[in-house]
Length: 436
Image (cartoon, rainbow, N blue to C red; front, side, top):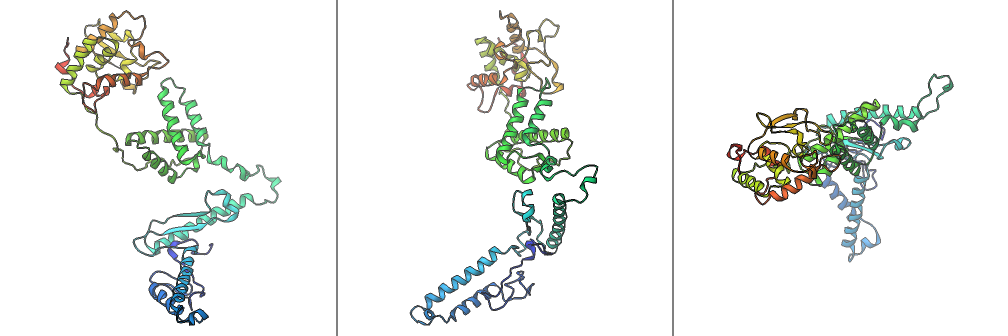
């Protein structure tokens, strides 16, 4: 398949050697054969009728018998038809001439270079329905492959006077180093250098490890430059099969892109990241966050005052301030400034609780239920420096535990899709007044 039309589906070289038909001919419009191509020819149906006519003329002993002649004719016709179909299927360059079908480029990899490829055949769409464009693109692709294969062969060839070179050429066995580190090695570099930043919490590590784990399971642990757009699409499809929402798919793709770009930069390799710009429905499985209705907000605050414990203090604190749950759960008692002329809570970065953005550092006024909660926290007899010790027993604030516990309690007072995070987009009842 190294000729000018090698591996081009657009060329449609259905070649029949005459063993089935009496002469070489073209079978229908757009099916060129040996010695003849274009719109000439008797057509596929006419060829089959010719088969039937030739079969009926069988001169075998069984064919002469009147009793079995029809059966023999039918069997002989099926055998000949199978030979025709087999030749169509096993030909090395097949295509579909219909204008409704795209043309493909196909070429087999030479046996001496097969160890460089993951498949023994190169096949991809030429992205055209035009025979002229397909032929031109196929010739260009074939020329590029010939040049590339020539360079691969030169690297393994014996070079005369090699001892006179200042620097010996790199062995073929070391060519895989040019593809960069493997994905696992890239993740190690990423977490070792970027993950040691104190602003990066355990969530950062888990997100990167989870995304890379998904990719390795879907496409394998390959060198960075070995990943292709097909691998990226396979990864996207695998995430969709897991029923992940559009926002979750975005986070995983962003993590993979960050890991690969960072590792490529550290190793000094040029990488066109195939995981960038992948199409998918970013709104799939997502829904707008529903605010807590005013009547439900009033009921919740009343229950907080009635139960009067640290979990209810946390709910009351975020209800009139709009704090994120992790911001409130990781507060120190010294962050509650209730002695000021205008009581407020100070939101600052801590080693055990990072902020989502740099702009998240702020001072938030305390009014209504949030002011009551701050006073109850400072009046408690707990010796801990934390406002909510139960969620700060380890090196990091356990906001996930707080979210699970509070959502379980809130579901009896709020609509179905409301959560503790809905307080951030809710209007405080009674203008934030004290509800006791």
